[in-house]
Amino acid sequence: MTPATDDGADTAAAPDPAPMRRSYEQNRIDEALHPDVTWPQLLGQWFAAAAASGQVGEANAMQLATVDATGRPGVRTVLAKSIDERGVAFYTNLRSAKGAALDAHPYAEAVFAWLPLERQVRLRGPVEPVPEAETLAYWRSRPRGSQIGAWASPQSARVADRAELEAAYADCAARFDGADVPLPPYWGGLRIVPEAVEFWQGRPDRLHDRLLFERDGDHWATHRLAP
Ligand SMILES: Cc1cc2nc3c(=O)[nH]c(=O)nc-3n(C[C@H](O)[C@H](O)[C@H](O)COP(=O)(O)O)c2cc1C
Image (cartoon, rainbow, N blue to C red; front, side):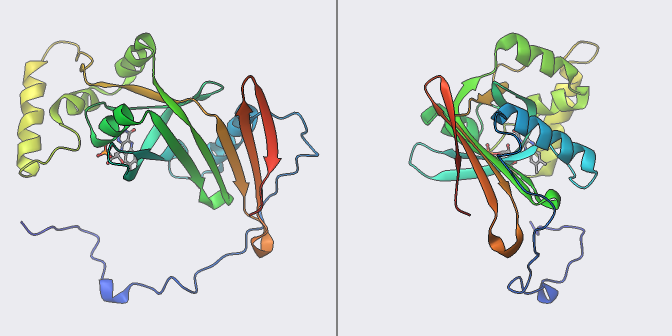
């Protein structure tokens, strides 16, 4: 099979990334201005700013890093579907590569890269299943096509070709015709319960602002990190 995309890019014309650079000058983190701010408050403010900016395609997209049973890292994009003081939750196929990795090591790091705002937020901590009632409420809010897609796709498994996927989709669509699409038993939500949250704001001369919130038992401590 010849892989084909339709972007028509000429790889010979790919630019040299070495001279690509910007000076980051849009904002700053000044903990003196907000001495009592908590990480959920700051995360909420930054997420709201990213969503409202009109510059971030999908403000709830985050890169999720896991470690598999053999110690190898894996990172991929997922969409956060809940962002609050409990942490960040996403939904996935629990039998996928990431699901297997999180079974072996239920601990993850995620990063929101809000690059047009010269910001990133990293969160790491243990991963817990989203309670069933919350998962079900989210599942029911999904478009029917996405629900059928979740049944049709053995996420991360090798498939022969696109036709195999489309045939599986058609089978599932026929199977659930005229009925609500039930929650697949292997599909659900996972929440990173943060024990560390770091806010990064780009600054001139690469002297960026980094503010780390770190949990110590019931208490959260705040530290400034060198860029
Ligand atoms: C913008 C974007 C959003 C995505 N959202 C999700 C998501 O919410 N859940 C998910 O399972 N995969 C999502 N994916 C696909 C994952 O990046 C990944 O390809 C898939 O989950 C399989 O990963 P795994 O083989 O490491 O388990 C998204 C990809 C992109 C680019």
